[in-house]
Image 1: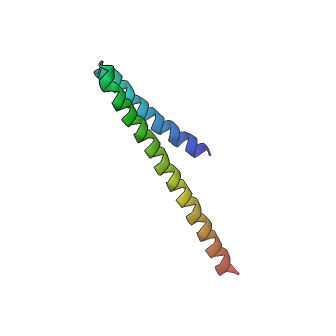
Image 2: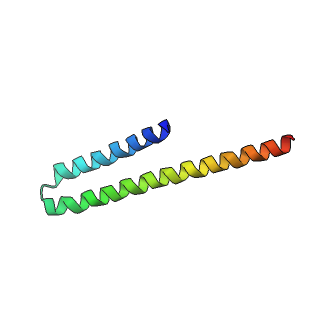
Image 3: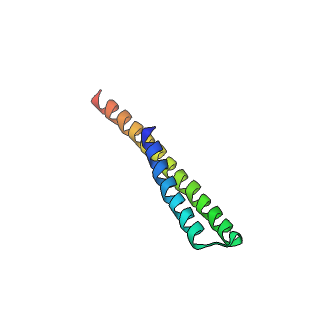
Length: 73
């Protein structure tokens, strides 16, 4: 749980920095809005990738534990 919080915080920090750069460099709202949407899509994708990786790691860990328990009996 805590690692997910820290990971999401890192992703959000990076993505908010990108948005800040867009706001600083692009003053035209009609140009900035699609870039913000793109950054939001990147954020969702990055968080999905991390969640899938955590799920896979947890499943792999459970499988290895079951295998070790089976061998040790």
